[in-house]
Image 1: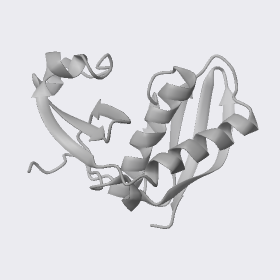
Image 2: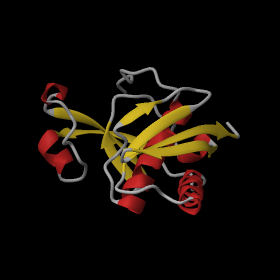
Image 3: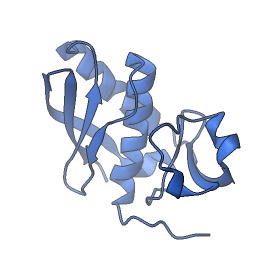
Image 4: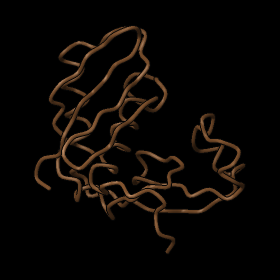
Length: 149
């Protein structure tokens, strides 16, 4: 098995994948446009046409935690770029990533190209807690940490 090229904290990085999948499904927005993933706390930015309500932010947290608790397998699959483009948005992936891509599947919930470290199943990530958020100039920033890891 190929080692990941980025030394992310695997539980947090996997939770970020689930958060991204949740944002895409709930709001129809692209995956995070900026992310800072660390062991103790992380943040992700999303482009949205309007600010979400506090209830919607709570719903994001609840949905991510629902998915994390499902013990979904997190699998690495290598595939040609053309095949990957049929199942994931590759618009921000540089051409230099090559023709063979390392794709991360979080059960049937999320898939994207990624070079980072991940847990083997979602329940290893614990639960996320969104501890603050703000919306400014079309950008939502979510700050979160993990609990129970």
